[in-house]
Length: 65
Image (tube, rainbow, N blue to C red; front, top):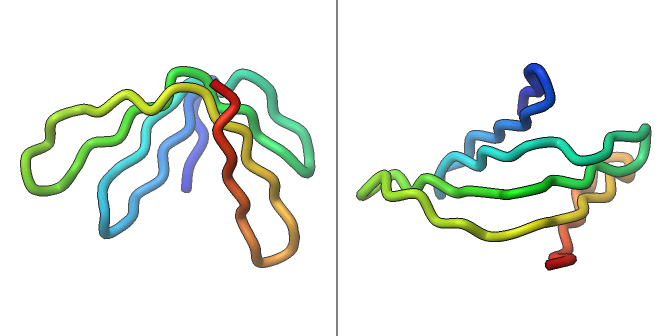
């Protein structure tokens, strides 16, 4: 997981998530315009807007589109 100049990137076995950070606090990140690049075809898929809650070792993600 990395943040760079207002953008959020998360690499996972299922693909790469790239997004613009809308709001960032110590307990939540609101991601605007979320895209996923799947490893098999690398075609971008737009997912919309998501809010993530950071709690200890758990990352909860919910759609707010």
